[in-house]
Length: 124
Image 1: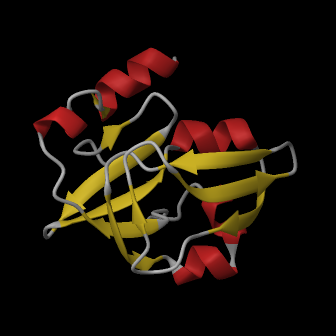
Image 2: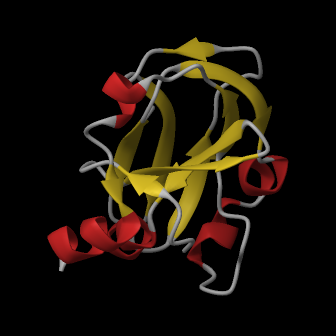
């Protein structure tokens, strides 16, 4: 995982790249879910407020709702993950993001997100 990402207490992350945010679930969440077998992602152009459910992930253990860490509009979905959700289980898979969003999030929206190192301390 990238040390520059910001994480939620519900195990989602954002990582800003070239003015767009990648949104995904943390390695801890993937470990807790077990073998992921299904992912339902939103359509591009869909808009979400911070905290809204934007995706569903099913594993052999359970189904989990995934919450948007900041408000924004989906500009791209990870087609590779949508078509082969089991890729999330691969520890060497680098592009585990679920969607990319365009966001005008301000400091208020970002205030409760944790640096990755702080997140790791909290879940250990």
